[in-house]
Amino acid sequence: MTTVYVAPDPADLSHPIDFDGFTLVFHRPSGQTHLLAEPAPQILSALAQGPATPAIILQRLAAAHGLESEDDAEAVIAERMAELAAIGLIERR
Amino acid sequence: MRHSFSVRIGPVGFRIGSVWKGPIQALAELYRDYPAPLDGIADFTVRLEPDDLFRRWLRPSVGIRGDYILPEAAPLALRHGLLAAEMGMNLQMALGQRRYLLLHAAVVEREGRALILTGESGAGKSTLAALLGERGWRLMGDEFALVDPATGLLHAFPRVVSLKNEAIDLFPGLTAERWGPPLAGTPKGKIRHLRPNSEAIVRMAEPARPALLLFPRYGFREEVREIGRAEVFVRLTQASTNYVNLGEAGFTALTSFVSKTPARAVDYPDGPAAMALVERLWQELAG
Image 1 (cartoon, chains in turn orange, red):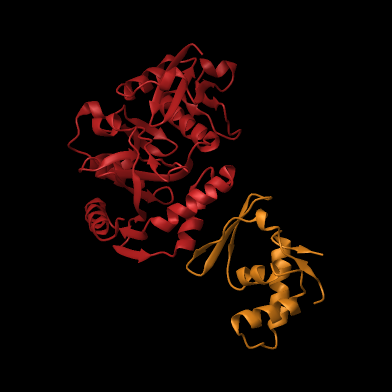
Image 2 (cartoon, one colour):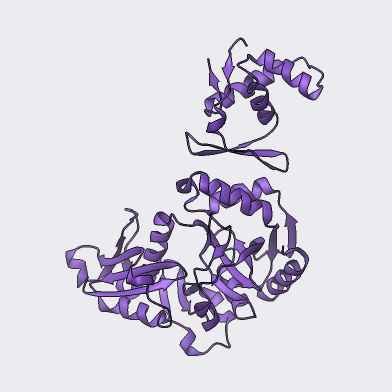
């Protein structure tokens, strides 16, 4: 829960394309196309404000989208961030 | 290579060479109305060679070679040399084409706008495109749609159409000169090549704007379904042989194509139903 993640260099990602609630991005260093579902694109945007733990990302998402924080929200965010790190879209610091 | 033949199909030049005269002669006959490669330079070379030294004379079998090879490509009997040439040409395109984003799809055109039919093998897209090509549409190709990443336009690749089994009987009115020799007992059953009509060949350098994308399925009760753009995108990456190779140019070309082109999945029970369905959807949806 205390892992700090860092956003990708903006130059590494293509302009995101929104298709019916899904977001497509092309990751230049790996040449891979990623099809992201909520909340992954929102996590990427929140992380672009600066390196953060899942708890801080949750605060930023709550502030940006006016979300009520639910009990397991931080665990869900942590899982999604671990997945994003596994596919190389964000990095652990 | 002792025998060779060069041809241009759409924007792509091929040179096909073989130690055997038969397949080259048959190919030259099928493509007799097609032009030569631009400036005489072929983009791809296909070689039809004996699978091993003795196989040249003894139960000869044709190995498919070229600039790009699939090591596991099974050799074909010499009497199916024409099929080997066609597979070789497809293989060079699938593995080597970098200029265009390739979609495994059939394409027909009307008034500068293109209808793209894609789907798995056996979905009937070749047959459907060939039928439309005889009913007022221009056949742009039955195997590959070539998307130009720079313009978003589709380029034609009107190779001869290989019709399989019962599909061959759907074209009763065509003269003998439109057909290649019957090939029986191939790995795909009975095959006969249909030569595209003169309009398809004369106008093959004319690109078209994508206007409607259909995912047809043959042999089901008639039905039309909407498909979300994310699913269309994923399906088209699977239908492309070179999406990954093109890198970001492929991503940009394909996302733009999907953004601009309306798409539907269509099931159809038979040829006449498909024709009517295509005309209706074209009127309703084509952009």
